[in-house]
Length: 152
Ligand code: AMP
Image (cartoon, rainbow, N blue to C red; front, side, top):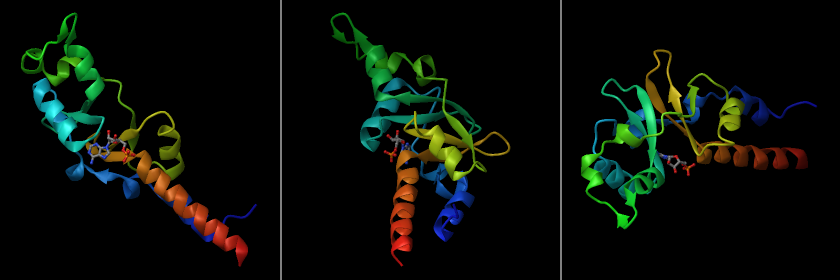
């Protein structure tokens, strides 16, 4: 079966063209106290954000759920822990990541089981994130293009 022009263009798209660039990504650092991470998460509205070191290397990911779970004691939330503990004490170090030259379809596959993937460049530095929203927008665009193409 032959591909439409739009399908061909989409198959050539790279993760770099679809990602949110690093400078627009909310992130925290491993040595930040948990209260800073919670503030970033609450104010941004994101459920999780990447954790970077001072050289912009990806070291983990931190979510609201992880923080709330860590400070939950037997008698309720122990809010002192928010200033006593740091992000690196509790962050998730198994982060879903993808190279910035990966294809659109490789990006799509990675995001079946993750809400976002961290994008890494040749030097192993953090380059941005690929979100489900970016992939779904592309899928949606192609769906309407191919429906229209079949009618003419
Ligand atoms: P979305 O597909 O737009 O719902 O994004 C999925 C997830 O990616 C969000 O819940 C956040 O955890 C993360 N995310 C999206 N945009 C940003 C951003 N600009 N900075 C940090 N994290 C983000």
